[in-house]
Amino acid sequence: MFFLARYCKLLEENSFRGRTADFFYMLLFGSTVLTGIVLIGGMVPYVSESFAKIIFLSNSLTFMMVYVWSKQNPFIHMSFLGLFTFTAAYLPWVLLGFSVLVGASAWVDLLGMIAGHAYYFLEDVYPRMTGRRPLRTPSFIKALFADEAVVVARPAAVRFAAPPPEEVHQD
Image (cartoon, rainbow, N blue to C red; front, side, top):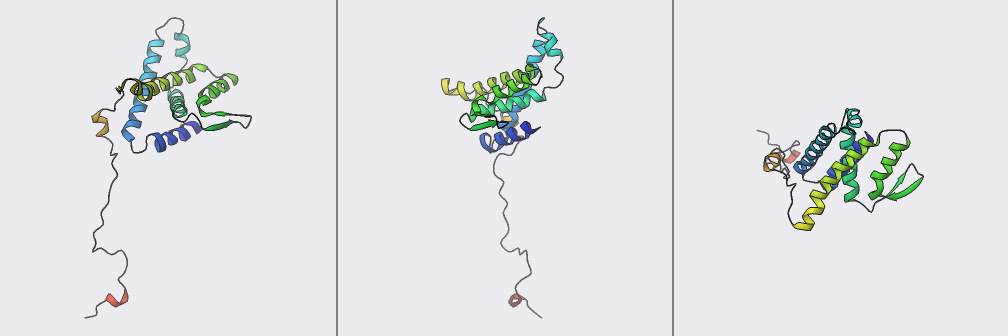
């Protein structure tokens, strides 16, 4: 929950500021990729047993957000449990190593890294190489979200306090 709250918030406030539809599309893309990997991986004979143990993909989706954040902010210095420092580019690998160290399955983290890398490559790297952007957010998704700033106009004649004593008319 800590990673979900922290890195989801950091992505929303920095990389996706004012682009709510793009953030939703990233989550939709990640969910689709993760579901596809698990479904296809469940059909592969030697790997299907590992994928059968994965019940929820929310941890992988959270790990995907950590991966995307770390790729977009690679030079931020971080500390892991106060033991050693590293840059944010290595955060997914440090967390993967810690998961293996405590005895958790590495598959969940690896799936998130695969989905995050697919998104990062198609959204940031590939457009710089070719000038084309394959993960452009569809217009029907953009129509669901109001990304423009909402301006609230206040009429000039409306007062929100009692009028000053000199303006009070006694008839």
